[in-house]
Image 1: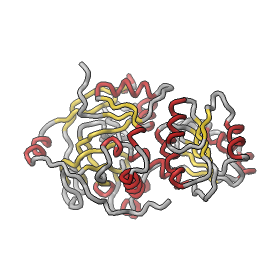
Image 2 (image 1 turned 90 degrees about the vertical axis):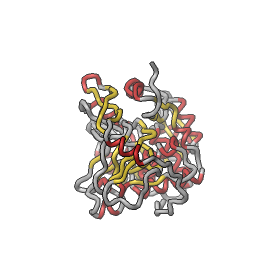
Image 3 (image 1 turned 180 degrees about the horizontal axis):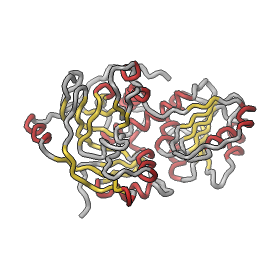
Length: 369
């Protein structure tokens, strides 16, 4: 699948009074900060940031809780850090040198900061920049009323795409990157490990590509149902069924592609066991443990293994173009919208076995008394 840039199309603008912007710059904002010893979040006041050269300030409408946020919260908590990188919002202020955007435009952005002029930044792949950093990893994130983004990596949200749908652009684009990395060919049969937001995104793009059959594995029944709704041919509960037997029954052989989106140790070994000779394995999940696998089975099968992780500007543009076309309802990926005060509780619940889809944090949502 190619992700060629497309004209942005009509864009709705939300007009802010100049006096409101000047007032915002002199005020503080509410944000979520990590409380390290509790592995949780607390609501705090922070200065409203000012955009620097080539940057935008965005007033956040929604920000999704990502698996990488949970990973950092559980394993690498930094007190005072502000996470969050899956966001949508309205441009509130422009930094020096920014003339391609206007205040009032709804945007999202590849959650990256880079030098802005190397070949990787200019081509929309800032994750390869020597000065690359991730918004919200660990600070400067969008679990706040305002976030600073780089204009070069910012993408307008087209007319007709709701804020909630636009808020899942980043996980959808990550799923797209994983599918692109698999180098699909017509007729490929694919197994997907995991039916969380990234796994569902992968199933969506696989179906868009028109592959052969798609088998999605997940222990949670509600996620398996969602996978079927969004393109899976069949689903399997790995706690009660044998994945290899299910694949054999569906495909009549081994899958040519295995895409891992579970983010758990041991998945590489499982993928090597399952994939067909000369197959392709894509590891899209994230964890910090060592991966252990037997080299001889891998040598016998000779799979190609890819490790995609970060989305691209082209991927964001393609995702938003498909959302604007209405090929699927991205809002169905969202199961909960929570306020700042509830975000810590939901983070803890997401760290345990759960049947949640995408959880969005709404900075404007009133907290329960």
